Image (cartoon, rainbow, N blue to C red; front, side, top):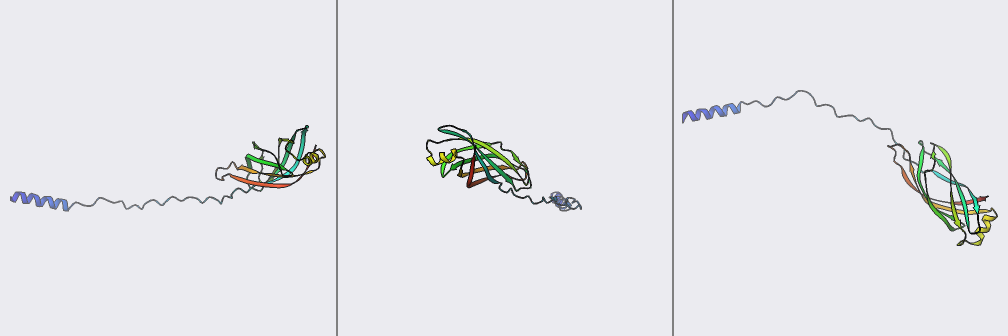
Length: 173
């Protein structure tokens, strides 16, 4: 039994003398520093101005009209109008609606012109509107819709803008 107790004592002594694992005296690496990005200006809404409504072709019932707009870009980056959805009213009557795509790129802090054609049917219109268009008088208009604005810069997200513009425009033949 003595031998057994002696072996047990040696075993306890050896396990008690075990030293802790070696630790490195090196300091942990400093956390990564991230360079601060400059403040990114959000995209501002472009301004639309209807410059003219032009008669392209006038028939007895249907008339093709061309709507010309000036688009002002107040941003420091060029913008693209990827989609322009609209409803167009003349003299408080619905004329047409549609979606335009692939409008021109508007340079930074500059303006561009865009135009598109649409057809108007006079069957449901008041006679006064037909008379105003034939006489090339001013027509009261309203255009409502939304436009998707893209910058082409990955860090500057695009936006969707709702618009509602109204005014008077001369009809030009």
